[in-house]
Image 1: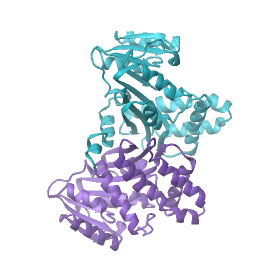
Image 2: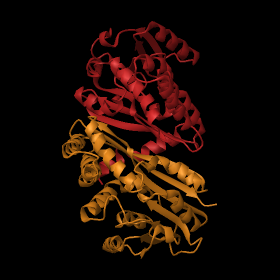
Image 3: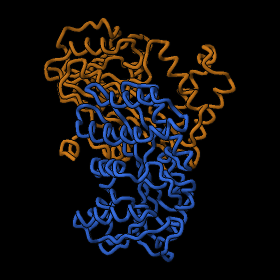
Image 4: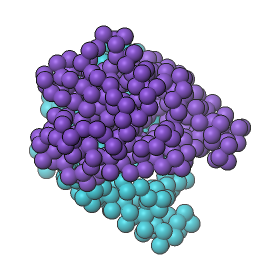
Length: 268
Length: 268
């Protein structure tokens, strides 16, 4: 697993991830709860934005959360401790060289990780090997190609495409959400079930207007401005016009749609 | 996260609705039922495809279904009679010159109609005038820009764009779904509430693979082949390749997403 994480690890990005989890926690996690006593691996926990929700929702399960970044682990540790959560231990490790024996876990959870990998199918195969028979593998990913809005805007769509292109150049896939079903099938899991989680935002949902359109999605796209211009994917004028048009969708007559995908499969 | 968000529209509601929906009709209509004795107008009933579901779900309401096409009306009449439905009367009429007095109806229902109009806001204003205070106006529309799939395909997206362009040339708007919220606001309705209905299809939902990917969506796109080529929007080779790639998404590892939007507002 490369350390070439397209969103970076800087503090503003961490704030975005945290905002995202705070706003979308129910949407993404409400149907995930692990039984008392189960051993659960969170693979690629990052700064712990999901870990807090995950471990809080299954207080009697025991979590092991791993990430390749020691800094991210330190922050995740601080965050879960700050939230009073004690059912998780952290470990720095490479997703492709995890120090666990086959069949070590009852369940595995992977959120916003596969999108950054050149070979997600290899990661899933390795993770599946760590599961006990009958255990579940849960995957959550976004899909930037699921984004559309009113008023529509060519330059806004171009700005989003800059992130898609940069992520592809970095070996990732910003359109991976729609691919979770075939990826889990290919991993050889049983009972594969994928459900979309559409975030629909209009002015009747002011929390999401601010929390999702402005602080999550548009902030994420704005975050690649320098890289996109340096890579020749856009000009300052066009990119900034695109960001303005994304913010425009947060006004009183605007509408914004984005879909996350959650998939679960069972180890044979 | 506010209670408004949790108990108001919940994005998971969509996954649940679709999981529980035996058919697309359930997904679109399950939450529409009119009280006994209410007078309901279906504006633009076409050949009665929605009328059957609508009238069956509100057996003690009385429906008036209008369409500009006498042939469509005849077909709709045959269809509802064939289904044993007697709580609807049909009338040929122009949506922009409806022969009803102001305040004639308790509720109005409009499905897959606005997308074909050059001035949907005028139609909505006229319809709103036919409502009694406290009555509801319900609108359902698709949005072809909400379509994405796996495997992704440039030529498939181009084929869909042919329909979007042809509909625009004809004065319509194939991307109108995302615009329902501002349209209902602009109509001056109260309590405007819009909910997306995402149709997610993978091989675990074989009925939808056949019924939606193949027989509904791809058939609809394939239907504009001659017009698209005549208009110079595509070539036979490119268009046919796009249709092949749309059918490809119906295979065992394919995924297909499309979103309908349903909006309801209350007359002041």
